[in-house]
Length: 549
RNA sequence: GGUCCCGUAGCUCAGUUGGAUAGAGCAACAGCCUUCUAAGCUGUGGGUCGCGCGUUCGAAUCGCGCCGGGAUCACCA
Image 1 (tube, rainbow, N blue to C red):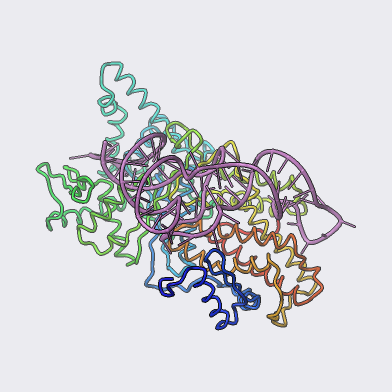
Image 2 (tube, rainbow, N blue to C red):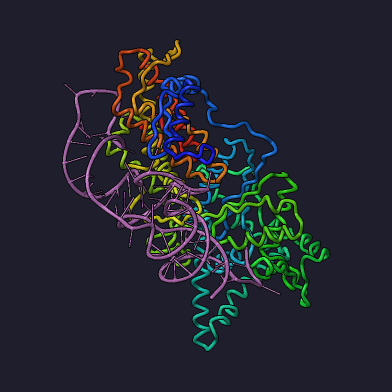
């Protein structure tokens, strides 16, 4: 506009004229309120459809080694079972791994298991004292649930002790520090660090139970990892880095021997990196594991899928590494996701207001089964196939429900209103896929799937056909944006839009009954293409596409 | 209190590198199955985009100030 020095209407009109003359794909244009709207010839859309509908790698980019990414997610504590918050973490992490791979980033999926520390010792202590040698086998409980039970038991008994001490006149703080149970838990931690055989034995046994339980949950959720780190093996890392920092003068050692980093000039506080007794804190370890990952993989990016409650921690981590002149400081990215809240507020393990991961998946399965049978869609299936279908639908609903929301935002989950299966949901998209699949199978049976001749360019497209092709064309863009923004919701919202638009087409335009072979072929191509893009999109979200439902 | 994030329809969410009349789903109401799967499609109603000021030809989008909600500020992880 500045170039033409004319008003928007006039400029647009002149531009439109010129483009109409120069480009054959531009069939006409309109100027509305100063906006130039170009109408592309139907031939353009038909050509695009014909040359891409059967390309399996449509929208995907080849991997390039210089874009390697280390992606950490899940990172559970071994003292309690996984809950809905972990589900969000795992689904985000796993979906991102697929999105990044599809966008050309080689991805290493890593999990850093917090298998040591005072919280495990609490479970160990409660178990040793009150467990009566119970095992997952003897109790019939999943291993992680069993551990969680003793963690809760510890907290309960501990609270009772504190209450008693307060009644004896101690302050809350003192009571919490002096309760015999916590002192004993600390003693167990000390013994563990001293490699006491009995303590380490119990620790190994109980962690083993936790892993068995986690693996079951991971498997059902459909997530996995390329490498698992254990904090028991990494918690001593980072001390060298801190010492090095002291020697270089970027960190300060106080008189009591503790080491600190001063970030006050950057608007943050001073942060402890080594205790006065020389032991590590959480930050120390994260400094060390960052170095470890960098040395092992030389990634271009190190992504941490961790809740937004640790924003400050990662801020400090990045700045600390930058201050220590580590080349990978700038490659660290904290994918900070919001909390999953219940109607009554944040989930709290101690108050028993957590939504258990296994229970939730089971409920989703049951709801899917109920709904499918109610609709009579499972008739003719073997029990095994029916169960697989219920699982696909139930988990599809759950995964889509979580992934369609922008990761950085808090989200609400109301257990009383079970997750929907209609409208903007996973099953809606799965259903669209299944219906296309059924349509194509029928076409195959009728011998209509041999696309011998290319579709001629002079076919006049109907509105919903054109809209669907437009959306198909946008798939690569949606994928790229999801990868750039590390946001699976872009893919989720895209595929919903695609399914919705295709459904409109499906509802109003006949395919198999179309007499004109060229039109029929075009609509079948459109269906093949849509099915393929839906399946790929769902796969990027970790959701399976059922052949029928 | 310091720092950071969020506030869009009754509810759950899109839309935010500034652009056209702010969109979906759920819930409510009204239609569409002798025609490819009705977990679908079509339509109706529903909005001071938290409030105010500013920047701009133009603001849900950018800036400042309020209000409301959340997170975080441990020799915890």
